Every structure is written in C-alpha cells, then in structure tokens.
Length: 140
Image (cartoon, rainbow, N blue to C red; front, side):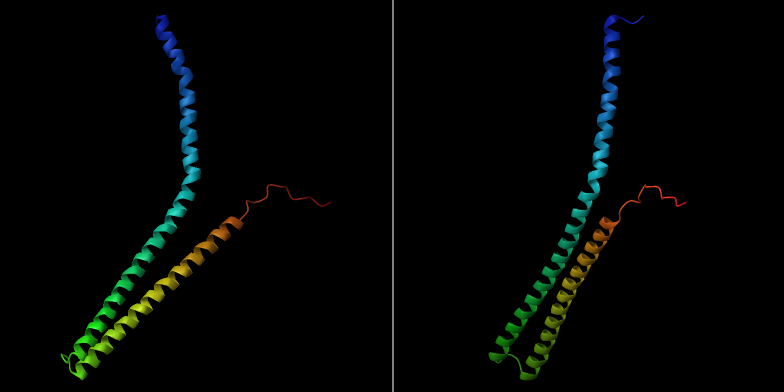
C-alpha cells in the first residue's frame, strides 16, 4: 500500500496533467492560427528583397558601364584611341547600358505585376464567405 506522501504526489500529478495538456493544446492551436499571417508577411518580404537585390545589381552594372564610357571619352580626348575604335567601343557600351536599363525596367514591371496578382488573390480569398448553414425554405 502506498504511503501518504506518495498518494499526495500522485493526486497532485493527476491534477496537473490535464492543465498541462490543455496548455499544450492551446499553444499549438494559437501557433496554427498565427502561422499563415506570419508566413504571408515574410513571403512578400523575400520577394521584395530579391527584386531589390537584382535591381541594385543591375544599377551597379549600369554605373560600371557609365564609368567605362567616361574612361573611353578621356582616352579618346587624350589621343590614345582612334576615332573608329572610340565609336565602336562607345556604341558597344551604350548598347550594354540600354540593355541593363531595359532589364531593370522589366524587373520593376514584373514585381508590380506579382504584387497586383498577390493582392488580387488575397482579395478573392477574403471575399469567399463560408457556405450558409440556413436551411432552404420549403415552398408549399
């Protein structure tokens, strides 16, 4: 037969287990309810960060091309380049800068379209109401 102390411990254990289980279930339920909101906000941030990073890389590349054009102009004015070599290299650099500008605009346009599509999806999802539980009226 268990001693009095053991019976008290056993009774206290039996009382605390349901409270512990209820607490665990509450925490899990809250986590399940909150997770979609956190995941949505983080998802958009990732998209914004990736687009911003790509845009910055394209801008840095374009700035590098502009610097090459300035250096090319200096070399030409100093007489280190022939006019034909200058024009050929200048045309090549200008085309590269134009391509980079076009790519940067495409990235911005794609980001705008993605944000609009996400907003549209979220609006459509929020508009969907649960089916009505009212019974249909019976006409006689």
